[in-house]
Length: 537
Image (cartoon, rainbow, N blue to C red):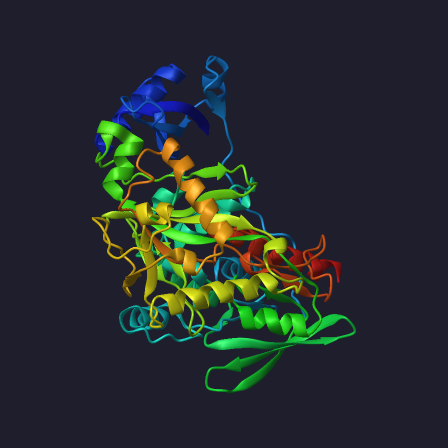
């Protein structure tokens, strides 16, 4: 396979015109005719918007030709190279004496279970929430009526918190397993574009069928997935896992015996954190972030990023990623930016208001939203308890709930008012998308003063980088507290808990990942360690 990089395309070309252009460009660089190209495919595509008067698509393509060595030998172009297709190889393993158990069916749990199933280990998955079909109904009920099911919501259920999100697949990790994740997602029903887009996303409209597809693959390979089944105790003897106690929503209790447990509980399983702490597992507080969702007109963002090219179909809705390092030592940044998306109610406990963002694959909504966050650490938590960060999250979410009238509406504030420390009395021309409805408020009444002041400074700095970010009628909706886990479950080099052998803390909930792909890769790594342990005995 030959890879050709730095191929520029006009965003105004149709798909067929783009393919024809790339074929001609590939033939020219390889000094062959277009007929000599046996195949051609996009390996990567990004948007080069550095020059607003010349926005282009930047592509890397891969082609097949006969006599590849001969073609490469006469080609002296540094943008041309030979590559081998990625392949994932399962570690050698033996059948475990007892079936491994995976707790949680978000990205980390899904991919841990998938790898174990592909290795013939017939894993058992226990998930406190429902299958995606039932979960979707429960979430829609909450959004429309305010009737929250603490076991079945935006945070809990098949697919984890990522099911109701933009489905971003960005990752900063340099790990080949990320390709395995993308390929399995496509096989399960995700759009094939995720294989080559530089900022891939699945979209909340495609995520349900995709996570269901992963589940069906696991089941077809002999695995079992038990929904509405919550981990309530970990059985142990002589410092090693011997099983788990699982309690169904109807109250039925089962003890499942096993030597290996992947603990992929997600970042919102607060009662499980409390149970783990009570049983003496080594936990430590972990830095995380707090803030609010900020919404702008998508047209404003697209024009700021693409200039006159805004609205070009091949570019789609523009996104951004901003950060500011303030003189007070705080860091403010945007996270989980959702072009053409909506702000959603994401509570998982009664009496608390939490926001998140999501987009459909088309990203065709009128607003852009992102979390505007301030990084905080243990010194900000107000105590030295291992779960102090979690306690702070609850405090802020309860304050937001009460500020907006204790009905799962959300407090919201115009950016102009926020910058002036004035309570909003109305919304402007940016209509909030938070489905439960918003109450014009002052976010200073539900966020710490240091966070509010840092967010104000951050908005002004970010406006210099992205013109219009401080748009007066942009809307801040609070609070956002679930960007990552407030706790880390300590583990050793073999990825087992330092407190309990056979327990594999995994993914975002364990404090070792920060997104769908990194969590999924961590799940794969934990599964691989179990497979290696089957050989080592």
